[in-house]
Image 1: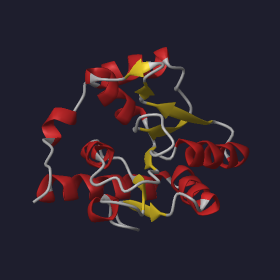
Image 2: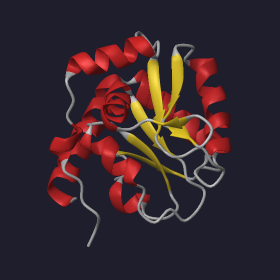
Image 3: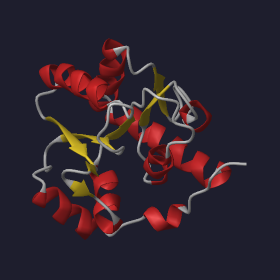
Image 4: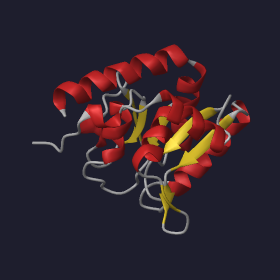
Amino acid sequence: NYTGINVADWQIDPELVKKFKEKHKLLGKKVIFYGGRISGLKGKDQMDQMFSKVKKEIPEAVLLISGGPEIGWLSGDDLKAAYASADLVVVPSVCFDSFPRSNLEAMACKKPVIATCYGGSPEIVQDGVTGFIVNPFDIELMAAKTIDLLKNPEKARQFGEAGYERIRKQF
């Protein structure tokens, strides 16, 4: 059995999302959300390398990070608004991350996920259906999949909808 999530808990007032985007200067940007804690095991270095490649191709791309010990954490409505503001979510753990909750939260918010091939992510994210499963050490591939979803918003939307349905029915 898996950990579940109540998708209703992840719905948010569009006005709160608008305020969050204004506060964090996200309007008109392509937002990549990194929902894990800032650490090497969670793929922070791979995320940074990937983002620099994406930024060259898509200058309006921004990386939104949920937080860490030095900067505090997004929580509650701010966390929901961060997911709602994102074009996609990346979960690049390089460790055996048994069942990253970020995958569930992203899918409950109808966001496509680019997730690690390590640990439990492949049990949640369906490659080519709800997002992509990648080896986080393959920076080129992770960047290419991110660029693909940012340049193809309809595909990203379809992946997000499929993820939402999967979470609603399976988790």
